[in-house]
Image (cartoon, rainbow, N blue to C red; front, side):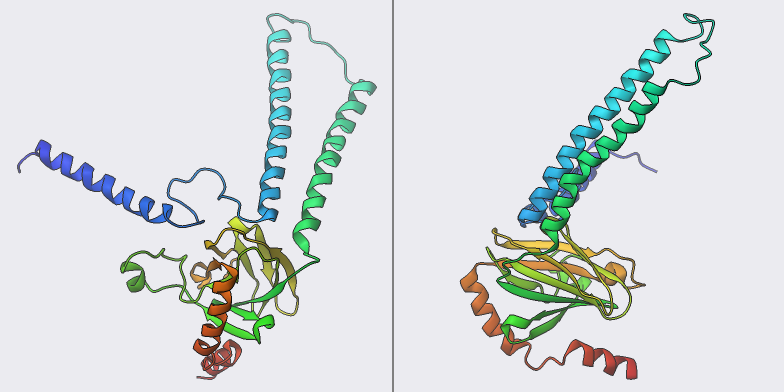
Length: 284
Ligand SMILES: [Cu+2]
């Protein structure tokens, strides 16, 4: 057996670095999705997500303050009351004042946190001035999108096959055959429901995460000003096909959206309604 030569080692390291860099470069060209080695949350793309980030940062300040306070107390106790410096322990068991303080202070902190938290919940819940509506329906295992304001245009969104991903430029288990196309700078109401088990329509960058439940419609909204691709996934365990329910939202300028609607109406005109498709499949 011959030993590994220096050149071989360099070649292997180069190859490894190259294979790591390739997906990095491919993803950095896209608008918004998870990135390799990502730390922290994906970039906000809607007003709701911006407020979610703001609340997250506020909470981080409060949590850091509490943690540091407890750390200082612990260090003080360890130094001041250790067995060497304080050989005879105090027999104190109750102190009304301090008990009132350690009950009221945490309660007060929770109330302080609850105010911005509820404000955000109501803000994310409903947009009073919706300009259009999108109906999202979760199926085992695909997403069905309907545009009630565009004459009921509807289609099914499926992940790309590994062969299509291998052609390049697309993300495995994030890109789909038919993305949800929406206009930029528009208040869009999103109504989510399910057809079978519970799914969840979750796009982190848009700040939308709604359960898709049969017989019940959940509402949210989004307004994306920056055109681009935004990715998400079903994030409610819904059966064996759960990892294969990616969500791709393509945000385009308003004029481009009108053109797309005209084309899509022709493209999907002959597509049977997904519900009918499902019935046909289950009857086989
Ligand atoms: Cu699902």
